[in-house]
Length: 152
Image 1: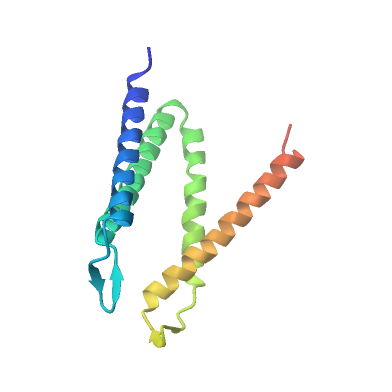
Image 2: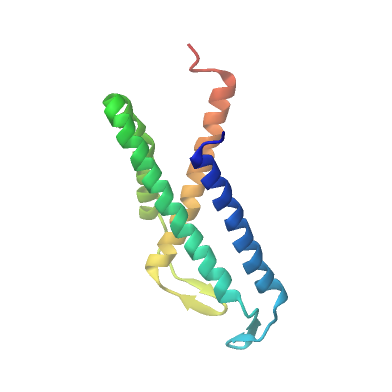
């Protein structure tokens, strides 16, 4: 007999698939009566955006809760290994902080108008630099793993 957690996650997954397909169907096939300024947009653009917000918030909350639960469980079994597992989080926070600090705050021109909101300019650069750094670290870790440099 399957575990209860498997059954629950199975049904939640397919319920989310159904919700996503319904919202995408509404977005693509209902119509274009919604106007935003001079542009026309699908009627259910807001529905799709709110669904994406809800999914992102749910992912972040569930990931943090699962990480904390795993850390607390590991802390009971092996405190040294649990604290060592925090190294990845510390590195991620350091990468984000450094990439935010080196982000440019120079205004950019978008649609013929200058954009001067320094916070969002730096956030955009932070995301880009973080992606580059983490992608490079992933490639480096893959190469090191394939070469077997740290095998005993």
